[in-house]
Image 1 (cartoon, rainbow, N blue to C red):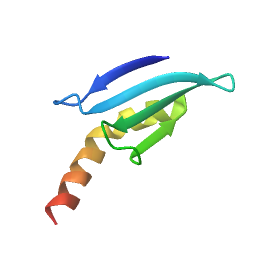
Image 2: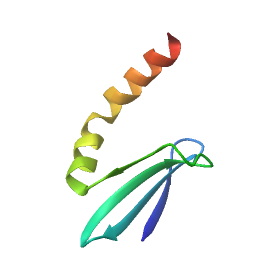
Image 3: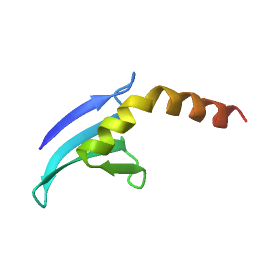
Length: 64
């Protein structure tokens, strides 16, 4: 299992582990148990391609 800190504050933690013979990436918000997403490698790669769009959409939702 490998763990990486992400975000400007290091408040997001990416863990890559092998489960049932497949690698799984789990992205969690630090100190928050219920907010996380688990993605297999192909979906993680697809997410990485659109992460900029996701960030912009999240900003517009938080603004109103």
